[in-house]
Length: 85
Ligand SMILES: [Cu+2]
Image (cartoon, rainbow, N blue to C red):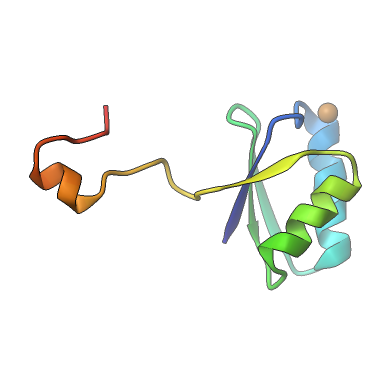
């Protein structure tokens, strides 16, 4: 699973464009979008670099992001200095 944050993805048209770009690269890819957070989750055999390039090629600016919301390192939790809110 590869996750990108694509700040300039703002509507259904963007989603279609990006989906087509990903599926041109890997027809078997599964793509999920979260417009509110501008995130794209891609399940594909293609590498993060290839997927990033495919999105950039259709005019967007993908930034690799972690799939899950940031979580605390166990060491931080143990000290009581948890970073979560
Ligand atoms: Cu759009």
